[in-house]
Length: 146
Picture (cartoon, rainbow, N blue to C red):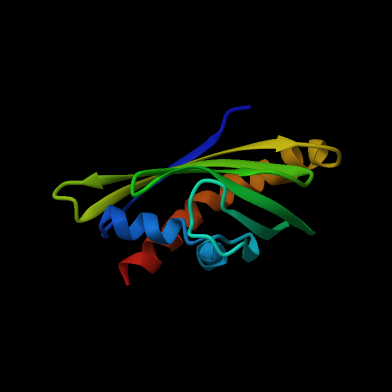
């Protein structure tokens, strides 16, 4: 299946937007299905950083560990699920717009499934993510433009 890709323009500098997007503990602030996010370890955020995220997927609460596999501040990052029945893979890019005081954020999301995830991804996870992602980006925009 193809990935889910959404973009939003935000009236903030790319450095500010990237910093917020990669502050792993803040995922529940702007992502509707993220119930909690706990960074694992005390090292500065970068390649190899992990976060334990619990998401509400349909009627299930699904815990998963995500790891930053790419980190090119302030332009791009990639996070990959490393455990659980549903493993998300998201690539984020932050591009300067105009004079650099605005940013274009693009999130590209895909899934890998294991066990019960093979049923959950097409029936629940992908449809929920497709519906949720534009709302999440709008919420991100509202938070960062306050």
